[in-house]
Image (cartoon, rainbow, N blue to C red):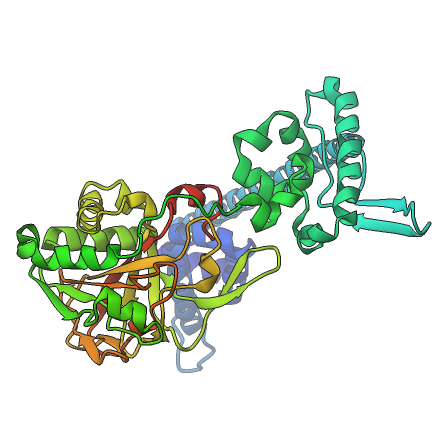
Length: 493
């Protein structure tokens, strides 16, 4: 410490001088050097204070500290060491600045290269776009100038230049087809959907994708597939009134009677809470009188393992807010809406038809109803939380009658949880309410026994609000006609 004190006193370095020497570099570099010089700096500061005290002009103080040759040599060595350290720090700073400069230059060079490649690609892209997304003509009947938007611009993919002539010819055919659609009054309702939505639609159509991937291509590349008329539901999905029917008049009564009376089904503990009171002759003689429908509960239909697996599959698919009703547009598509009368969450269990435990459940419903699973929709998984409910509604939809799957004729409702309070299934016209019980089920018809294509108004129902707990359940809806195959062709919407 003595030689550092001597250095400060001999050289005249003040605290400010030493501080400025150490902070000549940037703050970031100071952090690197600070650890090495902290001890020396502290010593120098203390030495300065000591020096100031020793060089005081106090008249009462006559003895001044004497510096010998050894002190002076040590001070000189410290000065040399300090200057070398500062020089090293400055050299590190210069190296970093040089690396930053080189890095910036490399980044600029890379950006310039990318820009050049982009310009070249854009130039090539322009050469591959034979026409804009609008086409025009002079109307042959009125002589007026007309234009129509046909979707995104079509391109010929790289390495297929040999097809350029064929590509342009196909493009002209598509343009002519679009005008045919435009002039067809029946197709006016789908004109706004008849667009090529992908820039490779025409190329894919030339490769046969309109047949290989029909659903996607008809929806997204209708002009290139010359399938705009297929956007019209009645043309894409014509209804065949002679297609196989799951139910004939009288089948419903026979089915429910068998569920109640067959010893095979006693293990499910069936109970009929409502059933017809009139004979077939009485119903025929009084067509305006509504008889009671069948409503049957099965107290022990699902095992705990099956319930847990169905819930797992629902979680995997993910729940979303339930919509309800809506409207059919002129082109045959159906648009649904979120409404305050239905506040639950739902998930469609497509895997239930392939999962081993899910298949067991579907097979059991199939065997009990004696209706093939092709008439089943995917199970609709439901979750009702606190206060959530579904107002009075019916599962029969009149719009489904002339469509390929036909109407929902039977509802097979599965309870996947207990609920502490609330959440019951209520039939207001029948004064019936079923409390959720894990593993149980309720079955009811949506149509009349004597006319299975006619709605039975008596089975309208509602999901009462959950007061405490969470309600999990599932709808298994059964249609009059095959539902699975039309669904694969987008004809079950």
